[in-house]
Length: 448
Image (cartoon, rainbow, N blue to C red; front, side, top):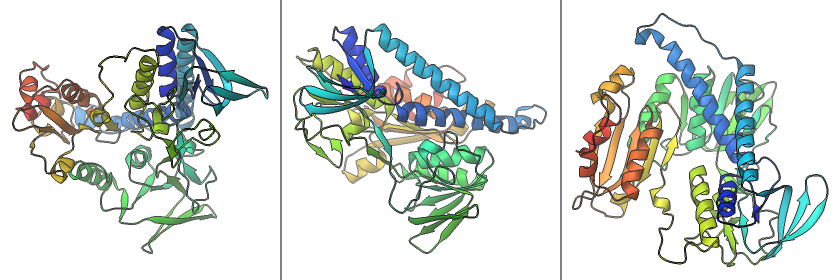
């Protein structure tokens, strides 16, 4: 029995079914996951549209005649809806083809093996299962001081796309989601102000990486309020005002809140099933299993990295463990080796050990960095911004981590992710015969 149909739940369902389990999946909203299909995918679709606009605006630099482009907001809305529908249909079809039973409704555990189901059609039922998997995801965090109305004051769920294109947007929160919103709406022509509670955007990322993004924002005309923490929002006569703790006030036509998420743990019956949890997150072991032997957790509810890729991998690992495939020695999911990307302009991606964390731990490392300006392909693309940074063990040469800033960083980071997972050395990268001309060549040069 799986409660929640996001990436973690659906991946677990298909793998468990292939391994011979009778699987029932309970989902109240959208198969494929609200956070995935209503947040992640639409945001990347909007960013892709903004990227196409930016490319056309710089057509002259590529030897083309000047091209005038403008945003068709209704067409963008239809495009996003079409992508969502196609993906939901694809996921649903895959589940049904594997024999997974899908129930539209909400599930609440009444014990370690029993689930009460409130069906969307008003009916109710009581079901039992040998194994229960919780994969209910998360939702945007909304503090008491933020009067969300879905029109002028928005959360991420209201902004893919928003009711109207903001003329002047205030983004609150400079983490991954916040900076993606800045890039997205700036590319659409909005005036954007970003409220940064600390002294750099992306406070959990490499300072060199953050500095490149900050310079890009400033070059585009984004207003950065550094060291300011929002504490109240008012909206009247079409003007939204965000007051900060240092006395500064940002004004705009819209405000967007991007300050993290909270787990969807209410109503799951965690206490009734005897599950240990803290702040709504369920404590799990290296097999994504809770303290109750037959109950597992995948995705944001587990309190691990809030990434779709992590949720999917947890789902697959859970299915294998629950079906007895991990009785012997096997590779556990290593969250420290998960690659992540930020779809700004330029793109940002990283994986493994960060330089700052290594220094904080007193660990000896070798750090090498090569800018994309040395790449023929970057010059061909008319975009030589950014760099590749590789962190390795100075004694063995084993690749420990890396960061990439630049075009296609989200794709290129996969090379370093594979190197880290397979314990490859910088010599292995140097001796790899990369395509020429290609941006990936810079990986080899950084390794060398």
